[in-house]
Amino acid sequence: MNVDYQYLVGKLQNAFATDPRVSMLDVKVMVCGGKIHLTGQVASEERRRAVAEVVSEVIPDVEVRNELTVFEVTQPAHPEVISA
Amino acid sequence: MLRIAAIADVHFSEDSSGSLRAYWSQLHTLADVLLIGGDLTTHGEVGQAAVLAQELEVVQVPVVAVLGNHDYHADQADQVRRELEHRSVIVLEGESITLSINGKRLGVVGTKGFGGGFAGACGTAFGEPEMKAFIRHTERLAAQMEDGLRALNADYRVALLHYSPIKDTISGERLEIYPFLGSFLLAEAIDQAGADLVIHGHAHHGQEKGVTACGVPVRNVALPMLKRAYAVYNLEKREEQQECQGVEEIANRGTEKQGS
Image (cartoon, rainbow over all chains, first blue to last red; front, side, top):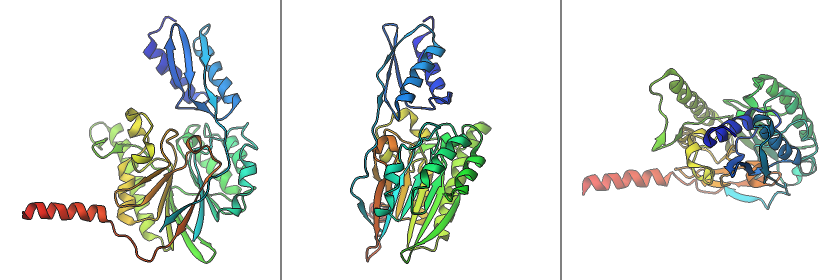
């Protein structure tokens, strides 16, 4: 990776926002030991894979540690009463 | 009492079909209306809006929505809006709707809102044309919100936004991006006109509950934060309207200080 790390993070986050497969503004990117670490939460396994694909396209041949987790949607909680 | 279901940031794409249908098909047992606070799609494409519109067909109560920043990205915001309206979703931008539900009138004023930041650390309409345009966009939407709320003739008044009007409900996000998450101008407009509830999204890492300076409840219902298919707020009328004590107390303190 012949690019300064802080520019690399910016470049990846821009790609995550604008690539239609991802369209996410809140993927956390860390560059450590020559590897790209991805953390945060995504809505689906497809989205999780797509984030890693985008990294590989932007920076070929880099090792990606994909630690993104898929969040589960559950039933609504009890209603909250609000006085109007 | 009115039962309001609310969600935001569902970020629908072509592969989202069926993800919320089971929950939404039962929504009418808990709520009288569904409000959606923007970021309906991942990329703002009309095909993604079509998937969401189809998913919403199982909802048996009125659906009112505003668009979010993601819904503008593909420059198809007008088509996205039309696609949703074609499937009976009420889409608001600087507009209002009054719904008659169980003999009560629910007034909703909706706008995407915009950024700029919060008092003490905010942008101003100063300098380059781009900076002026940024802040003036927020000012214009806030003014529309205030006018819309003032004009409502309803038993309950709700402000529906994508961007946040207060800092409380974005707490948890990085401080550096606060100016891109909302603006105090929106809260000021709401407090000037009055409202019973504010719904917004946008802040995936924020908090659900907050309050404006004048005591209007604010709820962030971003799906990635709630991790629930929707939240439900039961609005109940109280006998005595609470006045904006915060502002009055500050004013009184100022008077006492000057007099002492």
